[in-house]
Image 1 (spheres, rainbow, N blue to C red):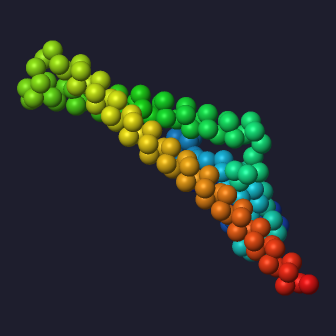
Image 2 (cartoon, protein in one colour; image 1 turned 90 degrees about the vertical axis):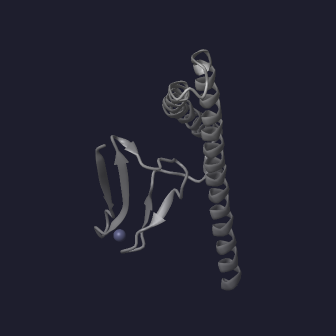
Length: 152
Ligand SMILES: [Zn+2]
């Protein structure tokens, strides 16, 4: 696996703002959910991140996000559950836990169970990401509100 680290520097003061880690061209923990701007730790100027919070996303961006997660699930389940299912089916037949005629049933059962497990984990993570994003937005709004009250 080839790992690349991309450093994003502040255009104003040159301080390292963000690191994007990618494996074989795929961004690690790749998500389009996150603050749309972050303050530079060096000079405090606001910098665009290329991501946006869930509530800031439009209708199609939301669907695209969910669709890309679904696509990842399909790829993940075919590769991971397919491979593990085949291995479990092979091992079950080889160790004679099941007869040779039941090997395909074993493979399919393992494939379904592992796919459901992957679906559950991915759905949970996606929902948590959306919930965290909405909480960040709500907290930022509450802070902005209390600051405007303090100023009065
Ligand atoms: Zn800066």
